[in-house]
Amino acid sequence: MRAHAFRLTPGTDLRAELKRLTEAHALRAGCILSGVGSLSHARLRMPGAVGDAEVFVTLDEPLEIVSLTGALCADGLHVHISLSRRDGSCIGGHLAPGCIVHTTAELVIGELPEVEFRRPLDPATGYNELSVQPRRSAGDPSAT
Image (cartoon, rainbow, N blue to C red; front, side):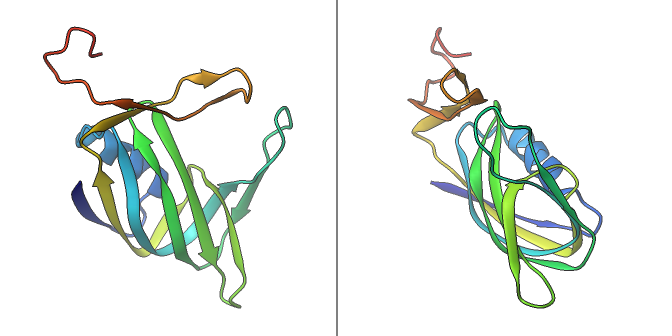
């Protein structure tokens, strides 16, 4: 495994920057090993049943990132975040655009060299779900 470490500065959209880093480093199978820091604004997609309308929660307050985890690839990101409020209560969900770094976000992203992630549509769930495949070399005619 290869690891990449980054520090995000105030005002950065966490999800947009994860997407940019995935593209900039051509991550074919990335995983978040560590993510800590703070947000000034958060937008989370909450869990729901298949077919339900998506529900988002927006928070405009100082928040600590207590957990950040997920899989990263060119086909998309699947990232969950847990946040702590000033009173110690926590909330979590899917990381959505609009999570803005307050003071810092420190990220360590692992890159798995033997596999690549894809996200084809799964008819059973209606979502682009993770598919793990052996990594194809750049010279492989079936590589895309």
